[in-house]
Length: 144
Length: 144
DNA sequence: ATTATTTAAGATTTTTTTATCCGAAATAAA
DNA sequence: TTTATTTCGGATAAAAAAATCTTAAATAAT
Image (cartoon, rainbow over all chains, first blue to last red; front, top):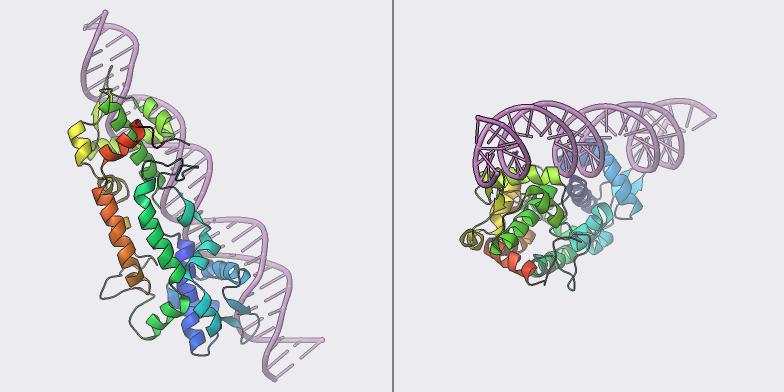
């Protein structure tokens, strides 16, 4: 469904959010361990998420990553996907055509309209705060 | 959304179906040209689709690929995806967890339930015949 | 200022996916 | 039975994605 970059990125952001809610800043190592992702790759992805202003980073001792509570209520899953994978989830044609629109559709185009509409809606209404609280309450898991 | 293998496979099957409706058998070269896919790769994918009994192949002169009209009304898009990509579209976790179920969910699990349900329904009700007729009527395109 | 800690960023390697190539097998027609 | 045509299947190659490594830059505490 998503690239590994996106999967790791989402899990990293969710984990950082849960720790930020507790008032803690986290190091790359900690993020990687608790999101079940490779450390070096996580570092690279977090660099990109920092540039996109999705997470906040501080260098040096006592540094690490964090997300303000206010911010994590604003950030939607769609923003993270856009930052890491671009808009392919939104605009990609199921059959890989470079042009596929309502006026020039591939044969599956209309079949996908409803599915895609619902997917968009979900990605654009789900916040990182919502996902982080599910982890904190023990209702769901980041590593399996 | 799908792998290239699946994209090419779907387009190939749809094209073969349109030609079979006209009573024509098609060669790999023809399929590749008219589905905008690499010839050698298309050949390999068609081999797999033949084994899965989705298309029918005949060797030698006047040979090629075909699909019976009866069969193309039975074959659902989901079958082709299963044959080529396996069940990842159905069972894969959005965050890549190896275990992610209603009882042990990732934080996005429940958000995806409705989206996935609708996707499944669409893939399991859309037939190759339906897609082929869209091409024949000129309402949609396979190459762009 | 120095040191230990931590992120930043680019180069490199590994793995997976995508794509090609080529000889073998099958078969219809002459 | 010979020939031309076509799929079959395994080996190989190229490209893209995933993952790692390495050095630099920043900074807090001493």
